[in-house]
Image (cartoon, rainbow, N blue to C red):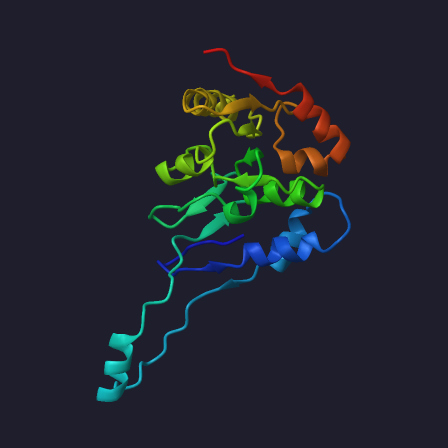
Length: 214
């Protein structure tokens, strides 16, 4: 996936990859397909044309365009999986299309989101890791009584499970109904489907998800 070398900013069109894959039949999201669909561009140096007085005046009166908050890359090796630029990572992914529903599934990464969307779980969003920003936390809490399923990675070192419990405690204290989804040891949602799981299998994981007692 994307690597940031020599201080160059690489742009990963991962969302376009997910949209393309959603147009295919259901099934796991193969890593190779996302690699092929996600194109990485390195910025090219261009000489800026000399500004004319009229151009400068027009630029000053034109509202600034929206800028990207961050860029996301995913390591497929042994390194830490989630890669960002050193700046705030913004809100929850695709939240504008998920926040209208009362039941939400929260996962760590875009690969997990992609495979669940393909399987029909379109009420899924991702936080780009396990540590939510204040903005992401506020988004989840914008509807009191929302039911949230946390489907973080089931890591062999229990890091994902511990993060899920800590987050569930905070969100339950904020008025949400929170349940933690258990996956087979060593699996995240994407690897679970790649290993042969089906939408029905994941639905059973949701049925077995447990809540916390404060």
